[in-house]
Image 1: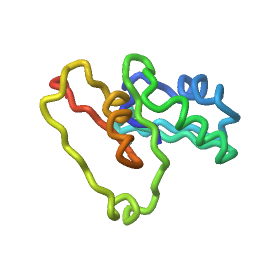
Image 2 (image 1 turned 90 degrees about the vertical axis):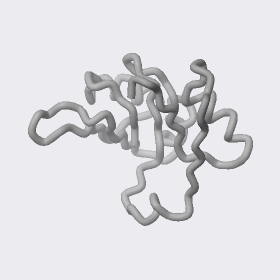
Image 3 (image 1 turned 120 degrees about the vertical axis):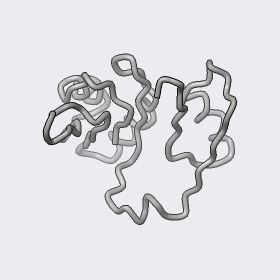
Length: 122
């Protein structure tokens, strides 16, 4: 799963980035059925788990066309997504704190699935 994509990011652009880690099996940017505009997320599939792990390690929070993108393992089963995971909300962050800085700070306390810093523009 690739989240927080800029609306103009295409499958070709994602292929250009992700194929550098390892051979890509498929890529899809999810789009509105009527307008065909990007929904801001997509999926990249690799032939090997090793390459997918390498992409998560090296490309998570990478700036792609002006947006810091989040990478996650895709969870098709909604029960596993909504399981026993916990959310932590942090307010009054310094304006210089981004997704990666927040992730790095809290990763000292355990495994983090996803981090999202909300900004005034969102």
